[in-house]
Amino acid sequence: MPQQHIVKAYDKELAALDQLIADMARQVRVLLTESVTSLVRNDDVLAQSVIKSDKEIDALQVAIDKQATMLLALRQPMAADLRTIIASLRVSNDLERMGDYAKNISKRTITLSKIPMMASAARSVERMSMLACAMIDDVLEAWLQRDIELALKVIHQDEEVDQLHTSLFREILTYMMEDPRNITACTHLMFISKNIERVGDHATNIAEQLYFAVKGKAFNEGHVSLDEASAIVAEQGSDK
Amino acid sequence: MSILKKVEIGEELVLNKKIIAKNVCVSYGELQVLHNVNLEISSNRVTALIGPSGCGKTTFLRCLNRMNDLIPSCRLKGSITLDGFDIYDKSVDVEVLRRRVGMVFQKPNPFPKSIYENVAYGPRIHGLAKDKAALDVAVEKSLRRAGLWDEVKDRLDAPGTSLSGGQQQRLCIARAIAIEPEIILMDEPCSALDPIATARIEELIHELKERYTIIIVTHSMQQAARVSDYTAFFHLGDLVEKGETATIFTNPKDERTEAYITGRIG
Image (tube, rainbow over all chains, first blue to last red; front, side, top):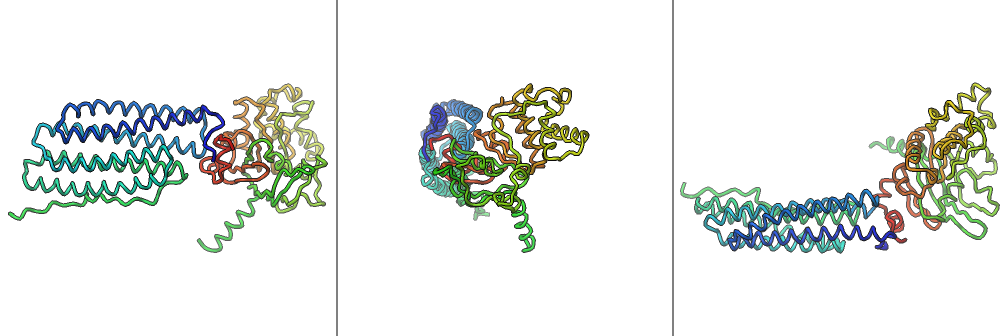
């Protein structure tokens, strides 16, 4: 199908919508990276700045809503254009949630900065966040190029994030059993790990939205969740 | 599902096809304008024919009540059946056919007569009303069904041309339904109307489909999307794609349909 509309302004308005999504995704990626960096470096100031910056992401979501509503009202989009605009609205929701998770990580980082740090667990969190950031990069690239193959790769990548979350969950549980004084820090780390795992899920949602926009049908091959943390039970201590 | 049930549904599907066009080819002299069109029109449904200018949609519409017979160079191959009977069979009386298949045109074209006479004309020449009282009933019924009665009941003797454009078009619809057709063909019925008059016609189409089978040619895709149950997309004389309107406009199968309905250069 030819890519250009007869009315060139329509193309520009659709491109502007993509640009807003790109801006939002890049901003989310920056905040996620910075929130985890602030955790690893025990950097309150950086964490504070992440919390403040989340507002910019919310503003981008409002801008996407506005652009999509304008397109629906003024252009009466059909077929692939219509699906893309509907999907864009959902994608901005997913990105907004991802921003919230970055903000939440930073809030917990500030709390953690006041108590002894679990360095090894923080590094595991960092590894996990690098994977999640790669997913954001890839899913944005897939979205901008309408690249289904890359979107499917992102859905596959989420399995790795799930597995890391499961193993991190076990690791944190072990620290808690070793010393109850670790429980506060560990509980926060567990939530942080869960936040990153959710970021991966939202990146997967975006990939699925792209599939819908391009193919005109819902992605229902169903990716297998490898997040087994919900089934993990702490072993009872042998001293009892 | 039992086999019997399946057969019943199958029969239902076949029975509900009011018009079946098979391998319809139409030429004006040497120029072939329709190529092997196969289309089934469902009873009591609105079917929209869309496509760029010159795609053959109006030609196809005009085949359905043999309006093209009036063009000497026009030749048709293939078959078009109405309730299973070939409308191009030698035994068919074209006047009777056109009584069953009424038509509303792009520009409202009331006769230069009173509002009453515009509607009474058809029933009178076809002998559908035996006396003045019966004719009055037919006129009122048709004007009511066309949603015009309340606006004109006090001035039935006024000339049809004194009405507004939208009212004139509804008068033409009243005239078309006064002879109790089964099918109404509409060739861009709203292209000369403002949005309010257009909305009234669209609402009317929605009401009329309970009684009639409607086939509408429209250049407005939004209109096709709003009023029709089924949509057929024509391009360069080919019927490219047909299907439920919701599917055609959200997820068309053919690239040419997609390019046309999304406003891309096709």
